[in-house]
Length: 221
Image (cartoon, rainbow, N blue to C red; front, side, top):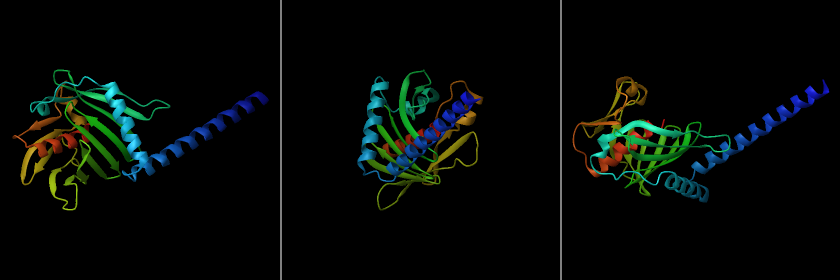
């Protein structure tokens, strides 16, 4: 009986300790996200960048055709007990590594670095708002489906409606629907090799970045 009591005490103590560690890590993570100018944020981004480069050095060259060849098929590594980082690579419809990402999440908050052979995207997610950088420069902020250009002007770049739960999410630039993002929850039902995007017209470089950013956020959910 004494042995069982001691064992139970040890288990409870360990549980309290682990819960405390998780709480501290979560609180520190949220504080880090609150200030992208802080040393902690910059250090985190550099660590994620290094990990991404080390894990996925051989992404296939990106060209204008790749946007329509990107598929939802991926190779994913989930976090372990002592590693809270998701990482993975998305493949083309020809099963070639095309888009790699690393992501840290805590509740509704998160940070993600994703890259193709020619571009890097950084996402800072806080509840319903996501800030986006492209190649280290502020690009846009996504709020409630509205992608607003970074800076004081808050120009509307694009809109996406993901609240319907439909098989595809239309993306509009101005008054024109230029593409749709396949809903990852339904895409596998229609094809074993589902594409991420369906393009309805040619897009310019800003629209290309916008579509990539919106698609990555849906893919990584």
